[in-house]
Length: 206
Image (cartoon, rainbow, N blue to C red; front, top):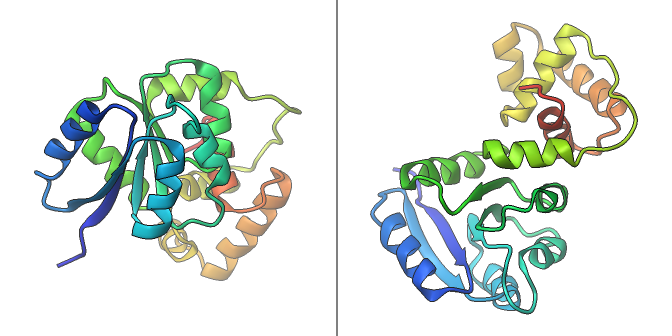
């Protein structure tokens, strides 16, 4: 049996945290290890509790959710933004600062559970509204034209697949995939696979 996904709930409204805890603890593969009511509490809890996934509100007094993302550093936790803030301009900085997902508080409970599992698995997840906000906030030079094979590889990277999984999916060697990934990162000016996945989302690949 696999270990449950350890969750930290960060929201300045106790009623919201209580509601989330009540629902999420009904899921057999989730355990809520803690709660925080502001950004400073959240950073301390992440350091002390080492959660797998942090459900993070953006609108909080004092240090807000974006401030938490900016200060996370090398924390292991995957962050799923769960917010009522629908300002489109909030999406790009949150994802750029390391959020693994971005959804809104009107999300269906079952969809929220699915989103948590998705980000925990290493994939990037954005609600349709957040996706539009990310793409509208995308700036910079024109995207390079990728070959069909590069697009395939990039799409699988965006789904969180490893080089070995990509090799199996495409019927090529792992060494070939590694070469494609190295070339891709250089062509799209991405420092790592997470940035590559973000680039893929922005450009509708995956």
